[in-house]
Structures are given as structure tokens and as C-alpha cells.
Amino acid sequence: MAGVEALQERIRQRAEEEAQAVKAEAQKQAADIIAKAKAKAERERAAILAKAKEDASERKRRTLAVAAMQARRLELKAKEELIDEAFSLALKKLRQLPAEKYQQLLMPILLSAVETGTEQVIVAPHDKERLDANFIAAANRELKARGKVGNLTLSPETRPIEGGFILSAGGVENNYSFELILKLSRDELEQEVAAVLFPAS
Image 1 (cartoon, rainbow, N blue to C red):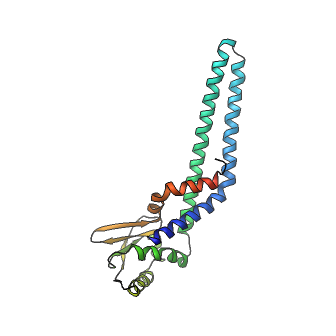
Image 2 (image 1 turned 120 degrees about the vertical axis):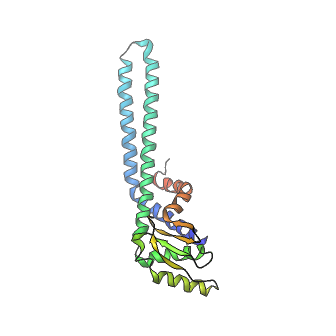
Image 3 (image 1 turned 180 degrees about the vertical axis):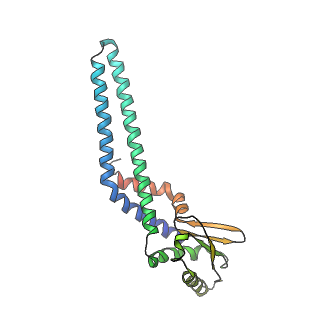
């Protein structure tokens, strides 16, 4: 699955690039969240200290604990949203690649995914021009050059996928869409993107 690994690496690179682009905003949002939570905790603390001495200590402890939990929840939510944004932007960048680079990215994945050499290749509606009959013909030539069957055809059907392709044969479809590959790789990639966005975390 060298082709899939290449796509995973490309997605990883794109996600990291987008993570760098939103890093400053992420840090600012995290700082704002923490500052607001701390300010709220301090207001609560001042109110507690003004109350009767016997319950001030317990009330203070509870309020500060709640404020700290709220700040942590808000910070985690902001981080998750920014990581999601980085992945979404990475997918968008992949989808917007020029036709030649897009084909160069997908060709090795297609060649390694082919099993019989007679499958139908199903693409997204927006990829009909980039992954056209010429692309399929080039794939068939390469398959034959490798001593394999090269009778792939471009399906008249399309699928609502972000990018990549689906191979269909005998009623069975194998999904090589960007979103599925990203979903299967998300746990591993998310840690790397988070490390770029939030290096101190």
C-alpha cells in the first residue's frame, strides 16, 4: 500500500502546513479562554471572601475548582475545533491541487489498489475532468508495463467524495477516498497536528 502511505504522508504534510497557518490564532484563542476563565474565578473568589468566614473557604475551593474545569473544557473544545479546521483545510488544499499534481498523487495509489485490472474507477463529480479517460489510459499502460491486466474503465457514475476514487468490481466497491483514508489515519495524524498547533501541551 505504498500509494496509500504516500497519500497519508501528503495529507500529513498538508495538515501540518495548515496547522502552522492557524497556530498563532489557536494560541491567541487558548490564551483568551484561559484569561476569561481566570477572571471569572477571581470574581467568584472576591465574592466568596466577602461572605461569612465559616463557609468562605469551602465555597472558594469549589468555585475555583469549577472555574478551572470550565476553563479546561473550553480550552479542549477550542483545540479540537482548530485541529478539525486544520484537517478540513488540508483536504481542501488536496482537492484544489492542479490536475497534473493531483494525478501524480493518485496514480501510485490506483496502481497499488488494482486487484484484477478490470475494475471500474468511480470518482467525484468535481474530478471528472482531472481523472478522465486519459488518466485511466495512462494507468492501464503502466499496469501492462508491469505485466498486469490493464483494462480499467472510468465509470459513468460518480460518488459524493472529497477526492480520491472508488474501485468497483463484481458489485464490490473498495473506497480510496481522501476522507476515508484520513479517517482511518486520524488518530496518528491528529497527534502530529496537535504537536504543531500546541507545542507546549
